[in-house]
Image (cartoon, helix red, strand yellow):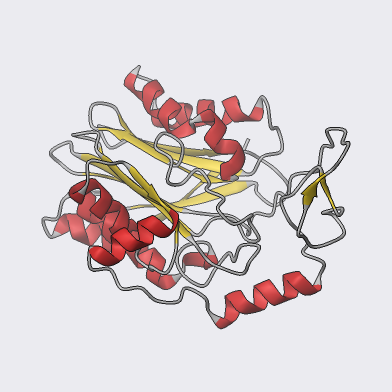
Length: 308
C-alpha cells in the first residue's frame, strides 16, 4: 500500500509516470518488500545479495535496466540513470555498480543479519534447495563446488515452486495525458547461482509498455517466464483490442502449455485505464493480490484475481 501510495502521490503532485514508477519501486527497495526486493534478501550461493531492475518509457520506448547489481541499494534509480545518461539499455554486474558510483549512488553493504542467517542455515542444510542439475557431487544431497558429470542422462529435477523464494515489485503508471511507464525491481531468487539474472530486468519479460497500447509487468519464476516474453505478448494483445484481463490470461496460458506447474502472475493495463491480472494456479497460489490507485479510488485499493 505504501508503495502504490508513493507512486500515486508522485502523479498527483505533477510528477511524470517515470517518477511514479521510480518512486514506487524505490520505496519497496527501502522497505525490503517481503524480502524479495532490495537489500538484505535472497542471498545467492555465495551469500551475496544482488539486485535487478528495469524502467521503461512507453512514449519513447526507451529502457534502462541493471542486473546482478552489487553494493547499491537503489536499483531502480540506477536503471533510470542508464536510460537517461547512456545510449544503452542494460548494464550488468560489477561494471554496473561502478557506473552507479560514478553517477553519485552510494556504495554500501547489501547484507543484513537476516540474509547472513538465511545463508548459514542453507550451508548447514547441505545447500538445499539449489538450482544445479547434471553435476557432481549430487546437488540434491551436497554443496559444491560442482563439476559437470562425466556421463549424464538428462535428469528432470523437480522445479522448486517456492512462492517465497522469488517475487518482484512490478508497476505500471499511466497519467491523464496518456503517458505510460513501467518498472520492476527484485533481488532475484534465494540461493541462485551467482550471476543469475531473471526476467525482471529483461524488456518484454519483466515488464513492457507502449503508450499506444498499454503496459504489463510480471512476477514469479523468472527463469521460466522470461523464455516467453509474457509482458510483451500481453501488450501486443491489448494493441489488437483484447481487454487487459484476457491479455494477461493469454500470456499465462502460453507458459502453462510448456510448464503447467510454474509459479507466476502478470498485471496488465491498457491506455483507457482498464486493468486486469492473471496467475497460474498451483498449490499455495490460488489467488493473486495486486494494488490499484486511480482517480476513482484516489487511494491504493487491494484487488485480487483467482488463479486458473
